[in-house]
Length: 359
Image (tube, rainbow, N blue to C red; front, top):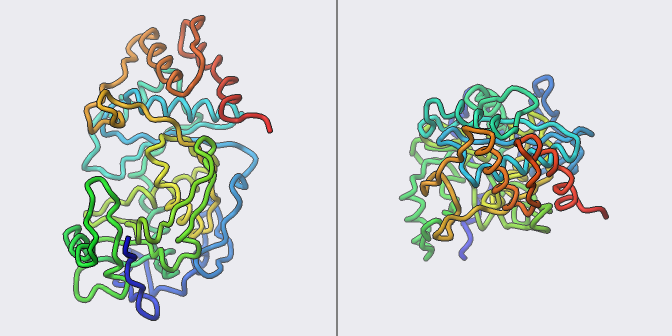
């Protein structure tokens, strides 16, 4: 694959920064802004981003989370992720949180948050603190983007998807359906009179972006060349909502999350999130990506392809849904359980043995 063009000498000239922003400083000065009390403090920043803390250095207490979007009710696939994250927290003697990822307000459905929380409660999956919502946290995302911009690690982009496809086509690269649209770096040197449509992460200025390595507790050693396989990914979109990558990194750090347990389809997002954690001087988390539940056609079960909601209207229905989710995770059946709570208690020990084997 052809690589994006190298940036011109010097750093890109930033357009007007997001609210409160200023003239970008040298790359790596992310920690210049004083953190809000209670939030992780950025380390001193070497070139290419702040020094990351080691995975697991976020504190002695395990904190996990389940983060659904209120765009539809829970289905069999999302229940697998919820159950896995709950069991992992309980096996570690830690906390389990629920975060409602409603940043993309146009896709959210009224009343769906309450339905999701009700489904979780029916299944015995109750968070250890009240759920938080991304729409109430936009000031945190804005602060993070300002810090990245001042450090020279974020810049405005005026390209449409058509512009990007045309630039890639000029390099002989055709965009494949469902494939990554690798940003060619068009606006690294400035907007050239175009209005800013989004803000992007400057991967070429981030040390280690061409070889991000991490260990997944189920999938094993992983690596990705983010700079050339993904490119300068979006932090905030043209239509206003915050991109998933930045929001989830800021939220996890602010909530003290130590371990992320989620579906395998999200594993590809991990290296981008690790880069942002390093750039902002935040702890690098531990990751476990669970098996996917597939539809009859072999595709991932999802709201987009019409996945049926799980039935939880009675304890028996909720227990049946949990039994199916447990089977997908490789856990043993629990025929003696009469309620979701009874089954959950039984599965904690097998989970610990399956995904946390002794050395």
